[in-house]
Amino acid sequence: MDTIIDRIARFNAHLLPDMVQLKYKAMKENPFRFFRGTCHQFYEDLSQAEEFPSSPLTWICGDLHLENFGSFKGNNRMVYFDLNDFDESMLAPLNWELARVLTSIYVAFDALKLKNTVADEMVALFLNTYTEILSRGKALYIDPRTAKGVVRFFLNNAKKRKERDLIKKITDPDRKKLTIKIDNILHFKLKPKLKEALISHVSVWLKNTRDWPNNYVIKDAAFRVAGTGSVGLKRYMFLLQGIKAKDTFLLIELKQAAASSLAPYNKTHQPRWDSEAKRIITNKYRMQNVSPALLSKTTFKKDAYVLQEMQPYADKIHFELLVNRLEDLKMVLADMATLTASSQLRSSGIQGSAINDELTAFAAHHEWHKPLIAYAKKYANKVNTDYQAYLSGYKMLTSAF
Image (tube, rainbow, N blue to C red; front, top):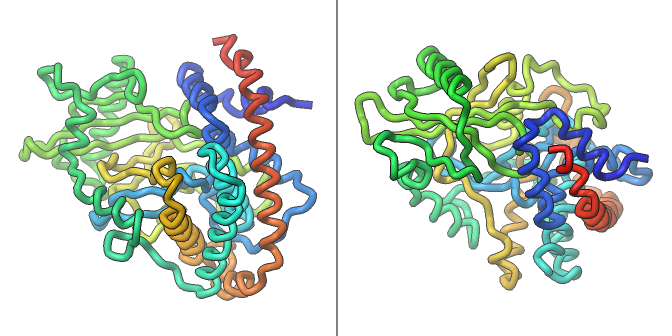
């Protein structure tokens, strides 16, 4: 029987060897970080579950957890709070999405040393709010005008941030030329030939596309590390400067699009996508109220990539600051539940997903709540056990490097 280490090593075998070591190191931080880095393991185990409540098919982001809600600037230049990671997105039973996010609440709250009773209360709140919104059959959205409490404060602060602040943070002040600061933590130096090829490719793409402003020139490029689950994929960032307006800048990202980690375990028939990047950006468009600014796709050296603007607005809720603020926690989780239901309503009736009537009918009955919560709670305990096994076998993953 395969060990946790075997399963993790096999899944990550195709990733960049030096960068995947950063992923393995990050996963040691705590059980929640480990959970974020093992989405493939969650669905492999779920596919073998003997007792799991059935549910209608919907479009799901696939890796829904507390860190995959955040703020971003939409293509209408307004700031939104929404689901923001669709790398694993597929057509699947909606309870798969719920099981993932409910488990994340149990794992994260345990890592934050919150009482089990608090986690139980928040899981029930999330599920009840989700069900209520789904039963109404109308998708909602959250921006600075509609947000309340912590999320409103969070979005209003995000609105105040400027592109120039992000540029100052990322560029190297010690260099005479405008360059990206290489810290070997989040930003890494590219080999000269690869850097030249990337800049050439993106420059030509920017010049020929109608989707992006072509009044910028690329000044620098670097390798970028962000998140947990996607660390080890090819991911590049580019610093652009206005051709005429020299005081205007833009940061863009090119992220390799890999197959969803759900794919081996999801038996639901899927549309035929021309690339994994097409799958990702299409599902972003379907499930979010407003898509992120400048969202596109391209192919570089036979690999599909998602290309989008890096934003000073992109941010996540810091739950460690809310540990002693129960009412604020409730409001945040209720908002996240609302957005989850809304993403499924918004994408209903598309290429095999259940229509609105099916979703509202499903929400009218609550008999699936109890077994779903039981599964999430049981699996959270398994995550903690697997995490300890991971720590014990960690040296095996890094010994060959």
